[in-house]
Length: 528
Image (cartoon, rainbow, N blue to C red; front, side):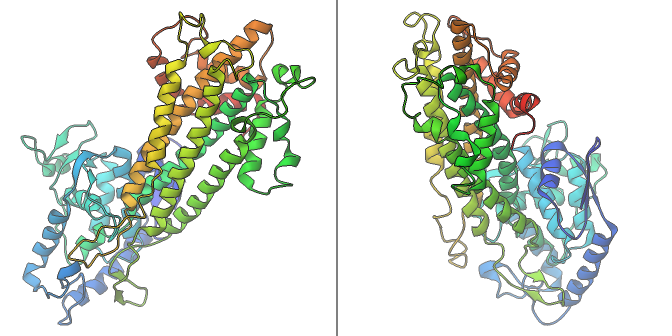
């Protein structure tokens, strides 16, 4: 697996797997995918073995039999093409809004990775068609509901497979929808890009739909997003500590790795200490400060954010193992055996998706507590109520905190695990399912909420620091000055009340862009 970082991005798909960076490049940045010749050769070799089994008088599950609870029926040769079509058409039973384009592209690329492993028994043309559809910028319409996270993400993958057959619904690179009522068929979209629809042969229907690609792709993208937000969370927390006249002494390295060796905690403490370095505001109250200790939301910020870091690292370990997997049922083993198995069960992925939702909820909660503290004159140590220009006439950031509180409350609900639930299906053949797809869907929303929460803390701490320096004629830290400068490009400083929503949305976009982290690093060097 190689990735070329010049534009356009190019990812070469071999038989040995992919990296998280490859998945993000294809899903989000439209990286071009090529297939290594050794992968095509391995796929062709295994396919020849499958065709031998298909013509044998001995029934083989998924090759010459029905599926799931209907596996006891031997399917005659003349009906097997219809069997494959029926499988995909019937399983493409999703409902609800279409999921995001990047999610669908992640699903397609990860399933292509599995097909390229040579363990599924498809023909090379099936793999090539999947890659051709990806490279053409064609996006199958995958619906929100349909997967139980067991036997793989069956419905989402079936919606993808249907497009390879020239059926179903898809959008072109220009966003035009094909396959819906009163619109042109998907076959026309494929033809416009020189792609021939695939007529699926024995085993290929199952091979296209029996995997955890949906939940895994969303896990990998969530990990990338949370890691970016964790650094921003350390930056906004440090600015809040400064704005609330907190101490930086609780972030000293001797209090962390040496005493409590959680690596994430040490990394967050170091980030905060560096952002606060050379702070005139912090230095001004080191002596004769009447506060014995700062509130937990300030003092314990590295402990909470650090625990999230360590949880992300655990999730990344699980994701790396799943990336190395070749999931199908039945699967073709290196010795030629075609073996039924349960590797499609999404429990390993579902658990960490839920674990991350819990961690994200807690990180958003502690951020909101710091924001509320800065707006309360009883606890903000000299700042005006709600950071308003004229409290009583102006409301300042009062309702921004309401918005933040609503987001945090939503994240608490989203932290309720999906993986503890199970609903039997397929006539009790599939009697214990993972609900991993649902765990992934709610995690995506939780991560978006966290980003918005941090954006509001950024707006609040920046306004509080501007007010502090205006009152004292003081200066900001180099990191704080750099961060607030990029914020002021899109959000005005303190003043009378104005339409606040566009400013909060602009701050959210700034956080999403990574520019907050980049600004801080321009002053203090790379942050963890």
